[in-house]
Length: 292
Image (tube, rainbow, N blue to C red; front, side, top):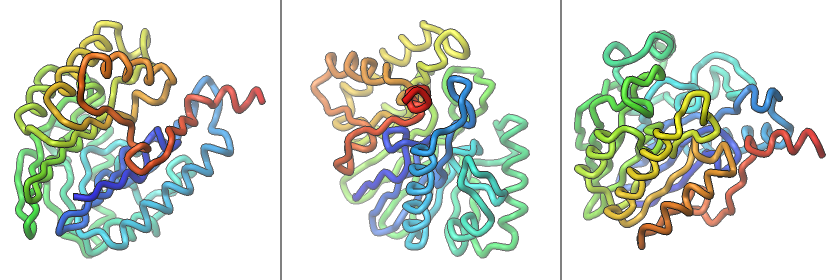
């Protein structure tokens, strides 16, 4: 199994886009975006450079992908057909991603909040003119060639009863190796999400850490500590864990990772390190860019 992170916070953008090669070529959560406002400021030029580069990387890998998966309908996890400069998105990009693909996407009618349901409805309407094979994947498994794709039942987008809705996790089994991609579980904060990941027993886990930049606003100290405890437990059971996304919108994310690493002998990395790059946190530096 070959794993290529295409767009993550450690690569300067909001995303968890990943390209995975087995006997199939799988593009997971194909989008890249920027936070329109952070510290009350719009993105800096350097962030737009990263946006355009990661978009180009996603487009390049989309050309060869057989399978595209969408965990949920937030704009940093799927590419809409609408124009948007903060997503570097337009209809041409979306067509290139979805045309002639097997699409495994979250059910747009079940366990989904209103905003995501509206986005999913628009996406499905746009996909009618694209030659693609669409499956609503929640809770289902699929055998494609020698690769098995297993999708979770909907998991909370972070804590239980999150207003942000639900996501589906993806487990890929190929030969003797198992990888799990767990978008936006935020730690995981929710114990039952942790239990599901342990049940899947992956060799490699890619997941989002807690959004500590929202501490005191949309996230409590107790939720951060729950995420720390759950991630530590996962790291003690799973040989390789890649934690990124929400966690790295703040430099304190590295202290969080260090606190977990001190309690496990297994490997913890961020996504950029899988391809030999040092983490390049840009949104976390936005205020600094404006002060230079």
